[in-house]
Length: 137
Image 1 (tube, rainbow, N blue to C red):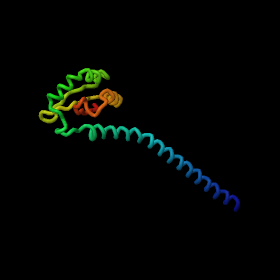
Image 2: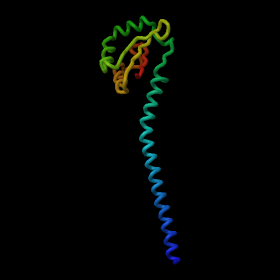
Image 3: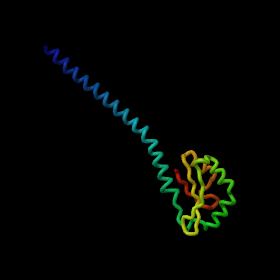
Image 4: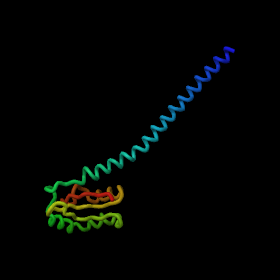
């Protein structure tokens, strides 16, 4: 009779070990799944931060006068056309008078891939000296 009691206690200990292993396995799976889901969220959050807080603000004193900006854009209309032709239904380029008498180029786009293509075409921090702001729509 003592032997059967000992075996029952030992089986209880084995069940706890199996339950712990299952719990550890479940925790590992949850950590992996959460990590996989977190990576895209971090990338999207980073893009939003860059779009709205880093690259979208140019102080008024850094902007060229509107007529100079208009002339530069007219002189490089072929580049504007190339940008808009990436996806004509989605990409729009405008000269905006954000500050009185000062011009800034605003580029509306739909996808990150389009943003990358636009930046490759421009190839600089400004559009031939005119600061630009990109807006993901």
